[in-house]
Length: 89
Image 1 (cartoon, rainbow, N blue to C red):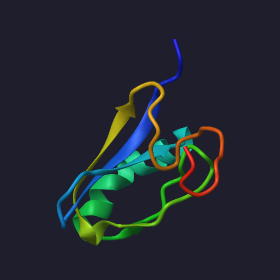
Image 2: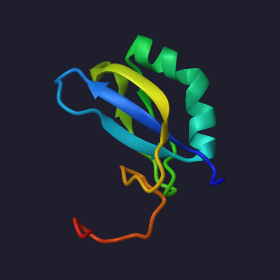
Image 3: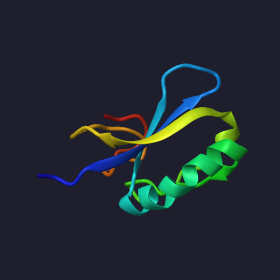
Image 4: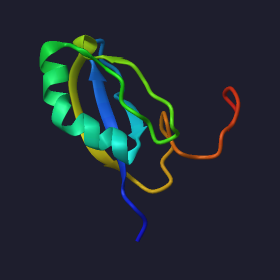
């Protein structure tokens, strides 16, 4: 069985679809205990993504956030998949 992939799911205060970021194992482990404090205090966090990059999240604009498992073959921000340039699919 393949390793499970972790994701950060953000619901922004402006509404709309949630933002989903694929986290590295290290990023998920670091973010998990800090998420309630980041969200509660409206702080800024920089989780590490599965593709090796980071994303800056201002939790003051986030209504709710949680860590979840990504289904297999899902492409989201930070997915650890072959790189393509621009909006190419």
